Image 1: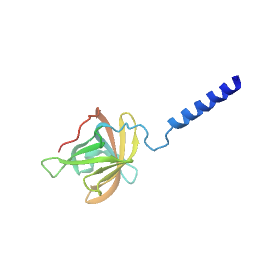
Image 2: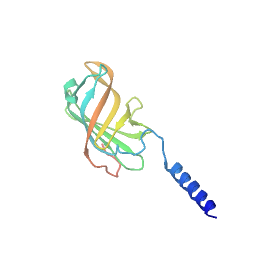
Image 3: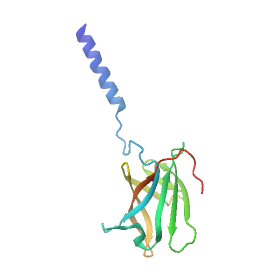
Image 4: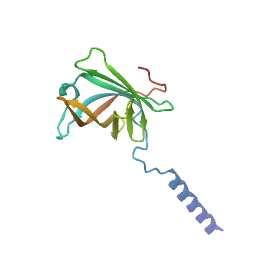
Amino acid sequence: MKKLLSISCFLLTTILFTSCSNDSGITVKTYFGKWESNTIRLKDGSTVKYTEIGTFNKNEELEVFTDQFESAKLVQYYSNEIKPTVKLGKVSDDFIVFESANDKRQIVKVEQNELSLITRIIINGQLEFVQINYTKIGPPRDEEPKK
């Protein structure tokens, strides 16, 4: 009887641990919250401050909401525009996709206070792949974003 009980406990423990494990890329959704860009890693591997590339005059702000759609809002401050550009989107798999499918950012790193996305931006008149690094500046909100 003790053997049967021991085997049963072992099997139950094995099943519980197996059913709780998850092998997906980003298991804990720590990308929720408000983020501010700080650096950009260029294709040659060098890292510069976000505002040093000449396209933007202020760091962009990204917010990922905890609403049912996992919505996102991006605010960009272009050097040649008076008002900021605001884009809405949502998280899909390991990507944040904004209003058009052409503006798709891959989540490559997410930690408690750091987020890195790969995207394409215009630098010196050319469209280039870069990694934008963000620092968390605020907690997540459970609402749908507005422009």
